[in-house]
Length: 250
Length: 250
Image 1 (cartoon, helix red, strand yellow):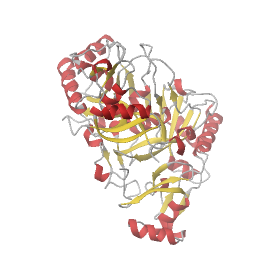
Image 2 (cartoon, chains in turn green, yellow):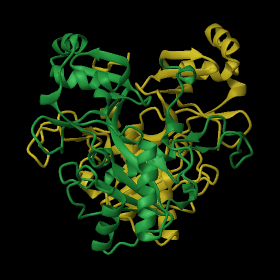
Image 3 (cartoon, helix red, strand yellow):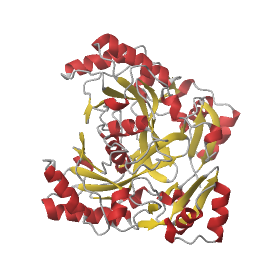
Image 4 (cartoon, one colour):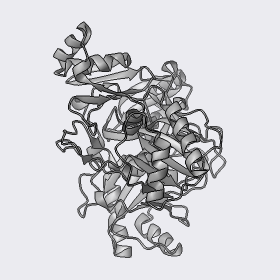
């Protein structure tokens, strides 16, 4: 397996066909896309292409946002945006606001971020439907290159109990996101009781290793993971969101 | 970056010098170890080499284990072993026992596992000090090959909110486990407020992609991640365990 950063992607703006831009960048880098590639794309450029940027200056904070912002020492306009993307506040303390987004993702600030977003006071929201984003980019890549790789839309999330963030798949297409070995047997014939591997998250993490956070390398290809690639778009990263009633941690 | 599975490791038994075995397997496969390699090793073979296997037949369950086992539908001898490795029970419901181990790792069954362990009713416990295990294997690899790669001891952990397990680093040596960008600036000069990347966990996840759970490929090399490698053994994966008072999820 190889992990290959894709250089030369231009600054992405609203309305860009991201798949076509990636295809051009690949061509410029002399890289030929294959069916068994996994194209991992940072959420940030997907959000930019889809117009999911907001200027804080245009946000009017409501009462709850103002109260929470004062409590947490955050910008009330940012908190208003966070709450608009939030289905449930998971934790609000010590300056940190962790919520479950309207898509069912649990992360800090509902995934809203201002780094690497041009324009003072401008932030990105997560894509409205990251699996649909992945499917769209996959179709655009197929149109532009003839190949039908898997596509992952990735973001960095913190997690309980462990220090640091890891990149996870918030959207995907053309990939079986979970490699389920439950019911299978090990080498000695014993059952692998609870082994279901979150392949899409591991792929997103692998891709992140080839990225430099300050350099803007939003697209990375994982090559040779074809075992997990599927021809159909598949269930998407929605399959990685644990239903509330199956989660021991709610 | 490349991810290269290492074939040909023999069945590991107590007392084996794992670093020497890996060096032989590498030689047999025509692979030459480099300073900037990261050698990712499954916890299971580390535990076997260190004699951290237990026969359930020799375990006498106590009262608490018997009660919990009945509640969860588990083998009381297994529960007794789990409790002996446990500092704190995090969740015990619906057949699942999640604990914080004596090392401070939060995982199912205190990391005790029976798959790919020879002998009916035999299980592996986690290494007593996985960072020390990584340092020891690193020293053995240096002795046998002259190279001083980074070493990760990895295990698959579940996590709240998301389906499936991902491989994480429970021990490491020769690696800066967290790539801390806090205080740095993005391309537009804005602060990267909360970006600290759990590199050791992302490396473990990347290595897992090249593994086949049923085939026994316990050693995988990630090549080209030299940016995160350090000459000293470093802080180890202990740096990835979030202190209780810094964790919003306790």
